[in-house]
Amino acid sequence: MNWDLLTVAVMVGAANWAFRALPILARTDRLAAGGWLERFLSATGPAAIATLFVASILPALVPEVATLLPVITGTLAVLATWFARHSVVLATLAGALAHGATVWLIT
Image 1 (cartoon, rainbow, N blue to C red):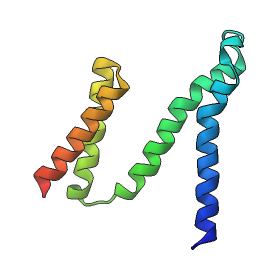
Image 2 (cartoon, rainbow, N blue to C red):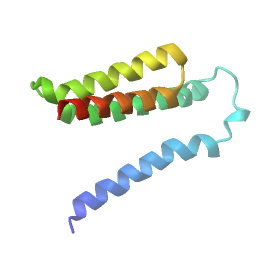
Image 3 (cartoon, helix red, strand yellow):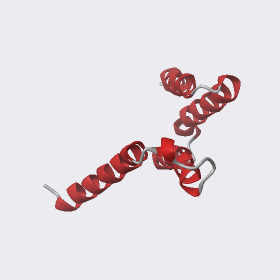
Image 4 (cartoon, rainbow, N blue to C red):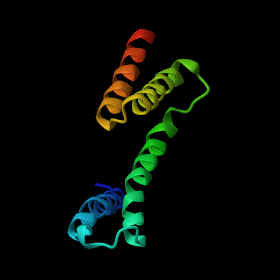
């Protein structure tokens, strides 16, 4: 077993838990409206999504169009659905469907 990998996995898991659990445990309903902590906590969601997107997209960024096309169609489907319906669930499903359909059509 690689202890370095296990250590990094535990650290990432702890950070992920902290980002999800601490706002709930902090009882944000008692915060002053528009305060710095409320702004920080409301920004962590989009920041986490952007981080996960970049981390997942980097391995797929290659100059081959056949490899990049599913990523492009999935991303465009997510953006189009989000701007049309403002639903994270529908945007995620549309992106997964577009990505999967593109992979199926290419192969």
